[in-house]
Structure formats: C-alpha cells, structure tokens
Image (cartoon, rainbow, N blue to C red; front, top):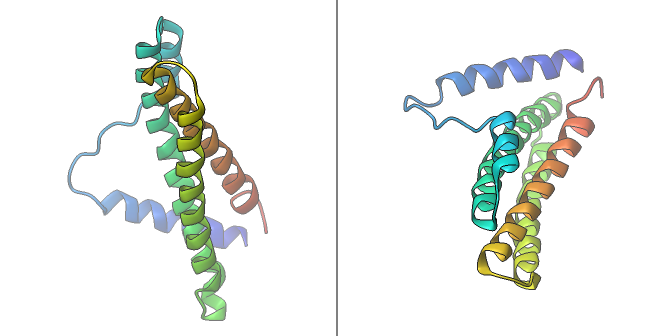
Length: 145
C-alpha cells in the first residue's frame, strides 16, 4: 500500500507541475501569518491576518484533498470501480456545504460590528479546514492502510 501512496503522490506532483502555465499567486507562509497576528492591533488588522491564514489553510486543505483523491483512485483501480473515489468526492462536497452553512451561522450569531462577525466566520472556516486536513492526513495518508 505504501508503494501505491508513493506512486500516487509522485503522479500528483508531476501533474501539478505542468498543470498551469500562468504564475500562481504565492500562498502566505505560516511565519508571515503568525507575524501578522502578533502585529494586529484592531479588528480590521485581525481580519487581514485571518484572510491570509484562510488562504494558507485552504491551500493545505486542497493539497490534502487532491492527494486523498489520487489514493482513492488507486484503491479503486484493481477493482475496476470508482466507488471509493465517488464516495470521497461526495464526502468532500458535503464537507464544503457544512462549512459554509455552519460558519454563516457563526457569523450571524456573533454580536458586534460587521468586522467582528466576518472575523468570527473566517476563524470558523480556518478551524474546520484545519481539522479536516488533519483528518485526511492522519486517516488516509499516514502509513500503510
């Protein structure tokens, strides 16, 4: 199984390298996000930091989803089916819907200025994407399965 994961990861790396001719926008680093949070003195500045952090966390989540997709396809290949891949795609879509609805709820139930409401929603999204990324990496991408 480890060979399948390594082969799938290598294939994904090759595909990702040639997938886009246009230069991609640089994803913020964890260090840059941490420095931003340390310097933030008010809700407006915190919002910029949270937006930067969401960009970082979303990129990490997207990478984990793509790697699990490759693994799911590899698991399906010997059986000539798409069952695992389809289940994972549906699961990912359901997760995205959940995060949107849950964090919308958080925003609408947060008291304060519009900026505080938006910051609560951003923090909610960051937390759920981090959690889901950890689940994907620890459950589907760690070691032999």
